[in-house]
Length: 158
Ligand code: FES
Ligand code: FES
Image (cartoon, rainbow, N blue to C red; front, top):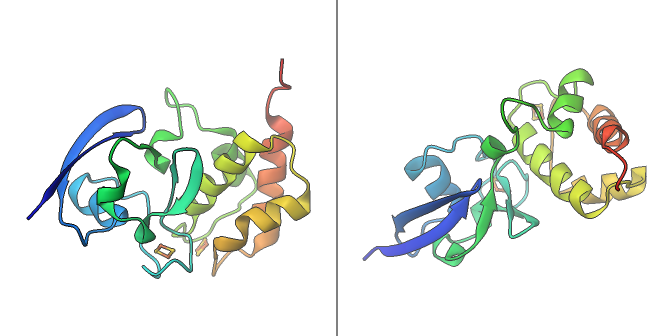
């Protein structure tokens, strides 16, 4: 039997039907065509599936879809606004902080959530926050530098 779930994804009301065993990752990719979040390990180890759930980065492969009733979800598809890349996206691009790109949506979402909570993190805080995101290509220095650059490019709080 399927369960009806009402949620908000990237600012829009979204409803879907899901089986109790289905993960949020499955629903996002297979039912809602939001394929930006990637399936790497499907067991909570790689972070490729990271989305922001009620302000916190989570591995969507570990969240049951039935758990997101009433939740606010952000995926990488909603990060750019009016065709303008988010500073984190822009800095990943300019800093060549990606190669194959499989891990990149997860890093973008984790970094965005970090900067929303801590607009000026130091390197240790960035590395700690990104510890749950794995990259097999780029190495971590360029990624950390991109997040630092994004933090520095953000307008000063009023
Ligand atoms: S696919 Fe979810 S943590 Fe790897
Ligand atoms: S860019 Fe390929 S896994 Fe990170």
